[in-house]
Length: 401
Image (cartoon, helix red, strand yellow):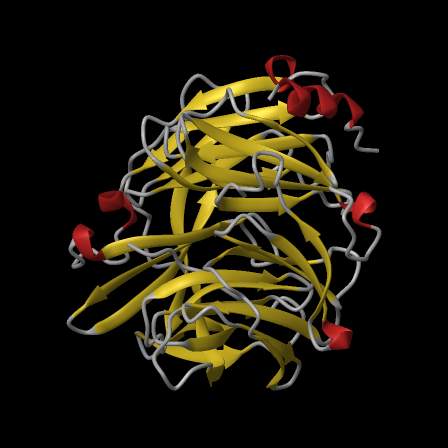
């Protein structure tokens, strides 16, 4: 174990509980599903989605419950490009390379992270694993990579009394399979339970945040020589962390397994805003037990960062975007035509396209509509217009409940 921590010395990487405000304004927006695609006829869940920020045509990857991964090309329409079927265990998460739309990373519960070349029919060109102890790999719960694509981090399940954050140097893989292990080392003293979420800072490649079912969000400076010195902040959510992400340079969002949302300053002793499940109800008529949170999106391409939340009731599957404005939530966009419980979402920032996937095995591509209130003969008529320019499309992801 000491050898793993010692190896990190080589690592050098160049308060509010109000309900959402639903007051009507002079101008409100809706999202309408402009494209709907059925991924599977066998009713497999779509568990996750990710994509590239290429423009104007971009790619998305979808992870299915039957251990397949389907890649699509999205432009004026959506088309299937390749199906990866060599996956042997449930997909933990996936990412496109930040530098190439043709390289696709998959992390699975078995403990293996693979890089696939989509130009070569998904051929595996690199593998990242920890086989330092008797060849047994540690089951993964999460993974992420630095924005410069130099370091991969993987969070493990609680194993034999420890929960690990493992680090690999992508450069050591040299874009080919060989016997050389690119594992740099690991941390195992900062979390006591499964490491469910990892998030590299979007602008500082040295900074990594981790979340766990032990309730802690830890923030590390990876340039430090030991785990103890690398641990810069430790935030106690007093809940079980499902997912975390960066709102900006100094603030994080956190969603929990009880479908609550917390907003944190890195140096805070408590969240500066906290919203329980009952505070995130999509409509006042919804039973909080039927409501769920999907994912936060930190981009302001739709005017504000937002939380995607849903509810299922007798009238169907409802979705709504709740804008995050300082320490409060406000209803931003209603989503018209959703047919499924959403499990994940992804936002294409250049076009504003919002993609959602879920338990109905559907991919939905949402576009923004603007509803303008026009006074006419002492009454108000709602006129909707579908936006087609930049910033008019959106994508979403929801979490299981």
